[in-house]
Picture 1 (cartoon, one colour):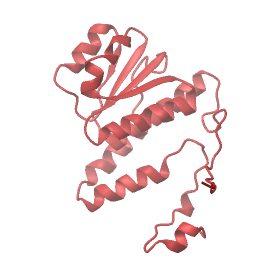
Picture 2 (tube, helix red, strand yellow; picture 1 turned 180 degrees about the vertical axis):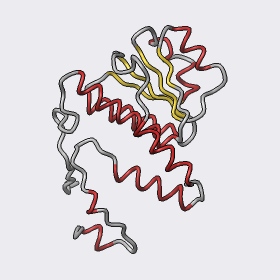
Picture 3 (cartoon, helix red, strand yellow; picture 1 turned 90 degrees about the vertical axis):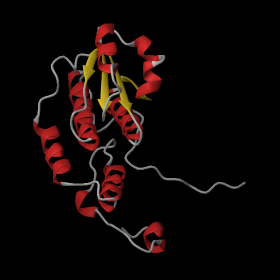
Picture 4 (cartoon, one colour; picture 1 turned 120 degrees about the horizontal axis):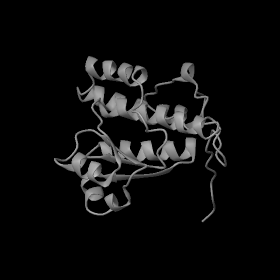
Length: 185
């Protein structure tokens, strides 16, 4: 609150009751996306139930032990895959990548092997899960709403950070706020 952008905006949504404690939380992006989906009629009770499931369900066996993580999406979930990879990298210093699912299938799948995980956010292209399993890599099918899968990916980031003795809320070289200054041209 009380920032120049707030004074300039026609409409505002202040979430100061939910102050982010972690450097790597994504309250703004996920809130904006949730509001957009609600406005378009794409946010229903099932999404809320999936989010609860994402918080309560254990992560897949062996996932935390993987050395590399690839997140995949299709359509609007490509952005979520990128966000999942970024948060994993920031919080746990893990090797992560993110791709559109069909792009991954035609090249980057070559890095997939035992000890790697490929996580699909949303519906996978036909046959992709089998292709990943044939490499020896761990396939994680995103069966929940893609935003709920992002919650699961964030839980994974915390679990991997803990396994590596890292503080996921205080990643190295990052600060909580980004302040952009004016530059002369």
